[in-house]
Image 1 (cartoon, one colour):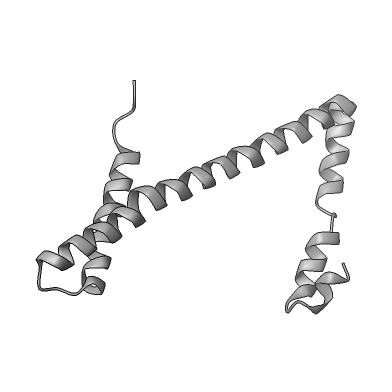
Image 2: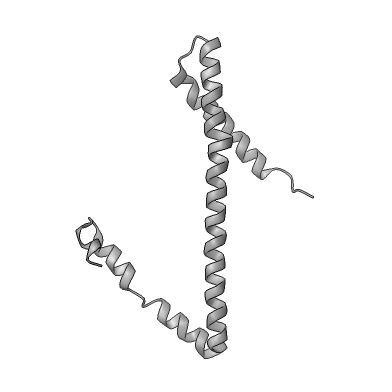
Length: 112
């Protein structure tokens, strides 16, 4: 915790890192009702949820890069060549269009 002492707002970080007042009652409830095996199952469930959330975030990040950022920059550059508008005026428009396309693609009909 000595490393965190020089960071602004480190009091909050230290209190979150050392404060386990919320986890101890939950751990005790699981131990009382389900025993040690239930505690292992709860740990596995928490790890699985963290991995699932990280997977979704990484997938969304790659989708944003490859389906929004790169096509928007390329299309803004191409439109800049053929239209009288500047690249930086076209970039927000193309970014909005490709973002809308990504949203519609992910919200589309269910895949069979």
